[in-house]
Image (cartoon, rainbow, N blue to C red; front, top):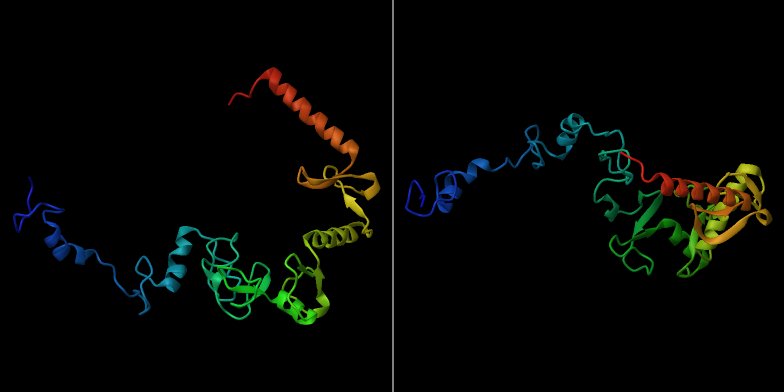
Length: 236
């Protein structure tokens, strides 16, 4: 059995036992505790967090032209993110992310369980109403801007269905100027509700459709499935 070079204990690594290995080899592997360019705490590759993002990220090919939405100034790894990792839990008055402004609270009944914050638009609506909002109530922004929390821009909806109705009417008004029409899920043309079919539950990710468009869609799917049964699966 292989033994340590300095004693007769069992060999661990690089010719030493566990005791002598941690005494002579491990200290050499310890990383520096300060950045090479400043005295800030070490983060990675010999740099602190600031210099690591400045010198290492561009070499890795990250798209760092976007910053965190909470206003901290941290550069993001890619353009798909909204805020930096962990910044959605910042306990800061007026922290903004996900298109809304949030405020820190620990006593509100509708606060987020893990983040301890609540939307500022909810607090403003409750202040105007004089009491807490009902459990299913939703606050709607008239101009679609989640950062505009003025009293004349907020509407209290009784439930999610009414909130979705307001958005559907707004899209119809902006498209054709008539709030009583809806777009077909297949041809995308607006028609009166009386000419469309509706079912609670999404068909092709849409609620409304023309009966003729639905028949054409079902014929197309039937033809594709029939060709697969006759010809078999496609060869790769």
